[in-house]
Length: 174
Image 1 (cartoon, rainbow, N blue to C red):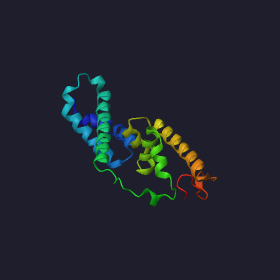
Image 2 (spheres, rainbow, N blue to C red):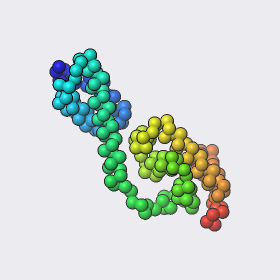
Image 3 (cartoon, rainbow, N blue to C red):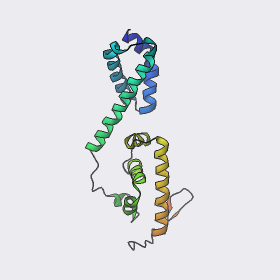
Image 4 (cartoon, rainbow, N blue to C red):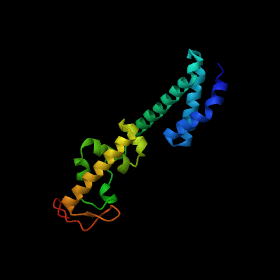
């Protein structure tokens, strides 16, 4: 079995398969090169030529998984400072308290997507949940936060879905 022939045959399919999941052309190129190297060095392990496509795609899926594992390690090795001034970023007095009071699934989803500005697919992979599940958690978390702002600070939603009004906070007397 010839590696060059295999890669020529499946190059485009594999690259777009990777790009669809990564959404970063440079990272997709790196993943493809790593997969090509593994295909070349392990071609002798392939037992049946009829299963070559499945075997190649499994190697690519493993490389994509490795990419997300490395990405999560980088995110945990270089966390944002704990003393970030969220109060400077938002004019709402109870924001930090409301975020901390959220149930864990919603808190982690909101934190990754909105506070750490992580792409939703990456956040879903980091939390080891589906993209649909992540979107549902974010939607429910935002709904809880809106109710909390309305109840405590007497803020309402405008026609665009943004919190507006003068704060009349029952908690901190703003």
